[in-house]
Amino acid sequence: MRACTARRVVRVAGVVLALGGLVGTTACSGDDPEEPSTPETEAVAPTLPSSAEASATPSASPSAVPTSLPPAAEAGGVCASVTFAEVRDALGITFQVAAASGKSGSVRTCVLARLDEPLPDLTFVATPLDGDVSEDDYEKDFVPDNADEQNGLGRAAYKQVVAATAQAGPVVRIGWLGEETVYTLTLTTEKATGTPGAQAYLPKLVALAPKLIPS
Image 1: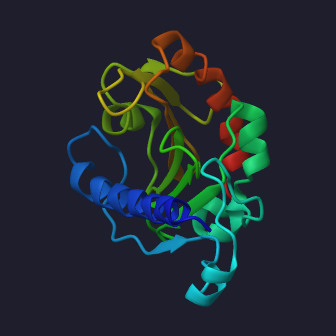
Image 2 (image 1 turned 135 degrees about the vertical axis):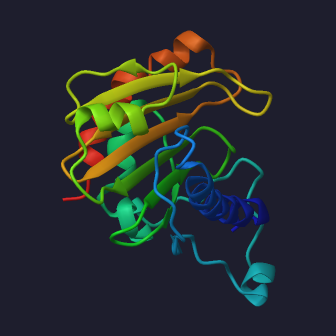
């Protein structure tokens, strides 16, 4: 495997760890609804060859992407219900690597990324609830500012497009209230993505969301 491929896998696992830390530091602010936790990271990555194997194997071309990669479910955790094929069919984006963090009873995160490009990436977060949360409680404690109501998803839901930054295109996010869990699904788009293009992902995320919920 190319060195850049290995670095991309490590980057995805690092994103999961960073998200876990972000959840812990922002849950009380209302900007990010997840409860604090200390995630245990499970990342699935292609096996790297030994130095002897590497020297005997011709180097891949710069544009080559490994084709024999493990399925997203092998990352475990909340990634167990995710398939690259379903995500591709829903969003039109092909992801190749997955990383998971968290354990049952805590905030769990699944990140999907590409091997050949840093963006886009897709993040699915499941936050368990300690007790009964009403729709009003959800709106007050979990829905970010400047979000719009989303119908037809969970007991209550929102949708949001956050403006592009110098590092990435717009962030497209939906969140919803389940029976015992709060979920968010976030797509960080490429820098070249415009606002209309980002908004077009909202109904696609809504259609994909129920397929990601662990059974």
